[in-house]
Length: 205
Image 1: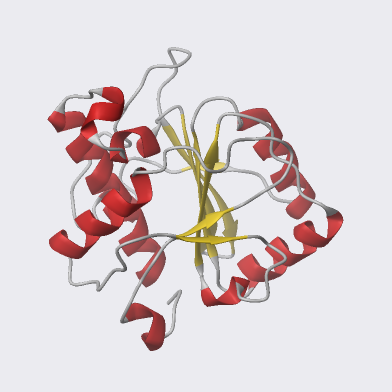
Image 2: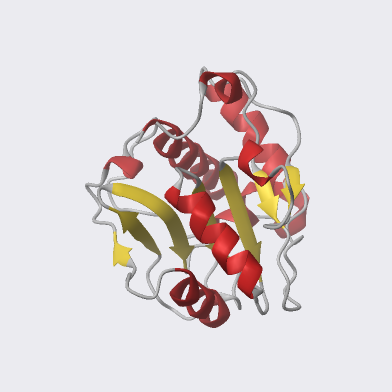
């Protein structure tokens, strides 16, 4: 179980404010929309807005579900590397969603956090794809980038997923207000449903 009962009464997502020059703040309407969808489609009591946190903030451990995205460079200080490692090993969860452009730097920084670990692609029959909504064929593809299939990649601590990395998928774009990208409603719905699955999985694994 990821979170204590107190958190479960009023769940929110903490957007990770990282350094390096990447736009950690991108897709501003995405997380409020996802939290609203979570509230209306599950029994989880969700906040109506995201939190924002740095790895060095004193209240980091009050937000056991972290989310990060962006198009650019990600860079952690040595203190942040230690802090993130501790956070994850104590039961925290990080969902990283590449908004196209952060892949290389994100993988580099995760290797600094866990030098001995490698990302493992989750098969399409993994429980994350059937938590609340069924995704028989894996992650939905929101936007095309490099003509690659979407992948859900995970870093494990024993059997527990600490980091879930959604790559070549762009879930956050699908969560945004409809007028931002003018995506078809079916794509937006699939993105929101997959977001709910990830949250539900993280809270119950």
